[in-house]
Length: 268
Image 1: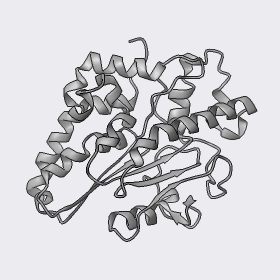
Image 2: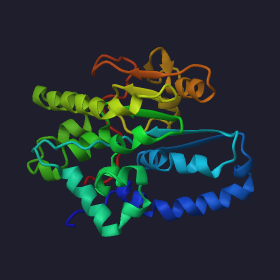
Image 3: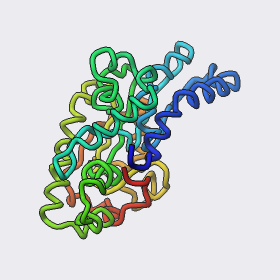
Image 4: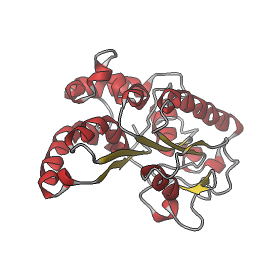
């Protein structure tokens, strides 16, 4: 294929067998009798949380409160800065090479090309189990690997911008704002249920549940007067619904880490 397989896709490919092994191990250890169950993951795990959400619910007994949380897993089908459909082509290669179609939701593959079903925008609208989508509108992994991958930037014009959003030129910032609009458009059909949670902030970040700094600390990101942990907790326990989309960057001062992006997966 000519380029290194990123962690995101490696995990998605192996995920079917790992998923079954983990579930088979956990069910007799108490999962089958759980009163509350939350399937969650970040990045590739966030994507897997969407893909496996309904099948996870089907494994548990009636009466169990089952919900899913996808953190930074809402990867979108969009052209890169050169105008090429890089990520679409790449996902198609992955699905073809590894025969992934059989492990993707039938509700999607029965009507669309299997490679499209790696993109949550085509899968999430059919998910029946309550799902919370947590994502930065300026997801640093997607900016670096989908919008401006190295193959679309051979001269490295985007290198400094991708590392620190404060280094972006006005033209690059416009591309990122356009990406945000495309992200929101791809998200649109996934917000059609009152049981669905939504927390789309304007931070330049990828994965916001894995560190206490972003999850729930005094200076953690805030949207709709709530930190991520509070919004997710209220949604899971049916205290309050939460569906909020932030204003465009750089309007949210609580995104204190909207400059340097954290170390990320290898670029596609």
